[in-house]
Length: 380
Ligand code: SF4
Ligand code: SF4
Image 1 (cartoon, rainbow, N blue to C red):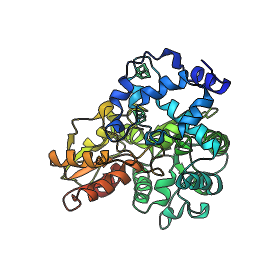
Image 2: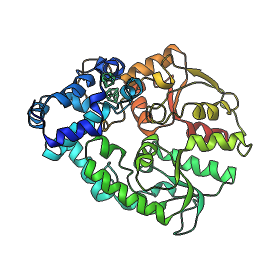
Image 3: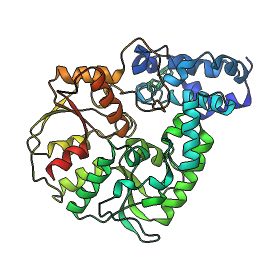
């Protein structure tokens, strides 16, 4: 068997020789029902083929781009491997060869030039703060909680309310917090998922330096995607947590409670990047249960079995071609079977995909998609 140095390093880095070809990764992969993606086969091919042969074949394998980065394959692998990273490595080789979709190229270029993948000007990143008294970090002055907002929350008009409500919640709880302000830039989560490892390393380096100027006991992310990315940073000293972990703690300590009621039946959708990747399952539920009047119900597929909404893994910039309905639409139908009035979530990408799905299946008159902080904003 011919094997190149690069391919050898993928095998070693990802420990692929430990694979027993049991197929549990493919068996659990949510997108195999919609596409031809067979992640077990890619793990096998990665140590069978030479890089040269692999590169020739890659062009035919458009399903490499169907992976949503949900990590179900990693959760299910009995050998502790991360099959998803084989796909990311292959994406990396495609990106390096320059053969990427224009949407992917534009998103990556935008991160490089403007610090966000949405093609928005850097200067408008903190327009969401307008009209609000927001504490921003001062160089060298330590705070307890430093907030990292996320590109999607900062720029998307549907999501800006997440950051705005978070400010109101923090003021109410009286905690020592600050937002990064104008210097915040992309975390690189989707950059890495799209295979641009070199740009991810640059983003990581810049962000680690930025965080060192604004010391904090904990960095709190609004998005689970930022949580996963920041936790990977080498050289970042502060602990990184998701906002639901902080709110659950504040509620537990009696520092946060609610004035109003939210008398609706809601179903919580576990974001893959929060649940499967970071094992944060209880805290979002704890926060929701603290809201007076709320009736919290569960999907049949919840927690580590949660059905992916297909919003991650760079999928915001790559369309999956399939005759089957989107997984987020299946999720909306499941919510209807439960007679839920609201699908509630704690991830910006899930909000966007589920919101589209609810409209696509025609439920928008009877069902809402809300971020946890949106509900909290109504009971503050
Ligand atoms: S689940 Fe793990 S051991 Fe089984 S085929 Fe997939 S990568 Fe190999
Ligand atoms: S990360 Fe999710 S979508 Fe990607 S291969 Fe693994 S199970 Fe499939």
